[in-house]
Amino acid sequence: MAELKIEDIRAMSADQMDDAVLNLKKERFNLRFQRATGQLENTSRLRQARRDIARIKTVAAQKRADQTKK
Image (cartoon, rainbow, N blue to C red; front, side, top):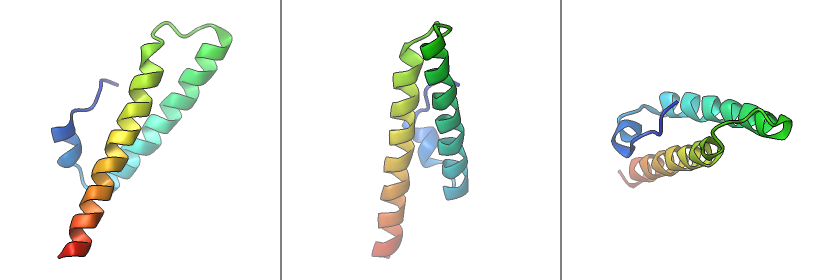
């Protein structure tokens, strides 16, 4: 999975964001196992997945805050 762009994340619905976070967490779990067993080739993908999760959660929180202001 390629790094998510902020524009793409903002275009997602809340359900899509939840699904994306769940998928990224599963991917991160698998990447950690690959690293532990020495099978991980692209070590930067762990960091990228972690940051993608944070990016999605940040946008979701911003959307929730905007909803409560209205």
